[in-house]
Length: 387
Image (cartoon, rainbow, N blue to C red; front, side, top):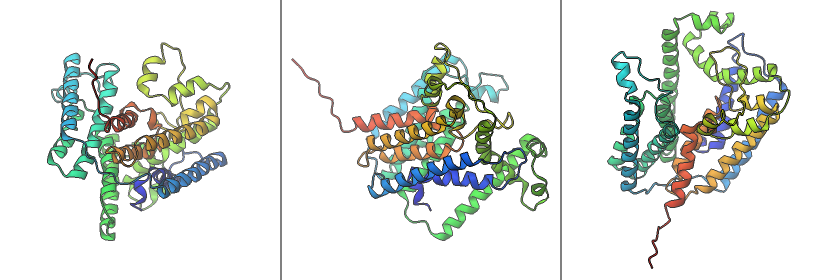
């Protein structure tokens, strides 16, 4: 099982299989039944990903590639990131964490930063977290580990949870490439740890929502409420299954009169740093999914694409995303020091497609661009001609 987690194409299958399994628990009355069209669509995506997973494995396109990046380059990148964050603090004249601790309103983390620069900075921060961890796992250099840990600090100052979550997830997938076979005893320990974490996630959720509120609002079934299953696991059910529910609900209730290919390309295929800043001036309409309830906001990577092109949207998005995955693996080959980092980032993107279209999320999709750029230049020598 753990060996499969080294291949992003298998991760897609495992991730969505888990989502379907959780959905089948049927603990909520507000989730619609999955239609035949949805089941056929995901069957096609599963078969396609199985084919490419096997092909990538047979061709040995993915393997553990030690990172031999010079420490000097990581140091330069680290101080560049710190300098740019300092520039943003001067620009905003505030630090979100300090404002929170001092009880001041402060600036919202979603609005913090210099326009255009901030999204790029967050993504580069996340990329360096991932690659410094790969360097540490390859070389065991303590300085690389120090930079890895320090790179989480800016996220705390700007109260950005995504950097921390993406960083830890990517580190986990990178770690998978460097460990050998995990003993059964340790696998059981990991399973217990995972269930404990999910239980605590539910405990925190109940504390924040006031207990029974969430079960009433989401219409938890009578069978579940009367069962011996700990109610804290209901939160995991909601968050893992709701994207599929929103996707199905969008298909059931969204009327697509005219196809909007421009909107589809603009908002479902370009990074948000581009669509967010240019969508308004260019008057490109942004369409949304149809939520089962307002506070469950995501609909897998495919729901919004349906709003633009009907069923053509999810199929086109699936194949365009697949093409990006294959291009990235080709452009950062296994001989590159950035190969393992790339596979780690790609694994997170594929896994989180359960929730939303991660390739358009600037903070994570740009990481792939950095991997490609650094891999391209790592073996290049710059020669200055004179005369």
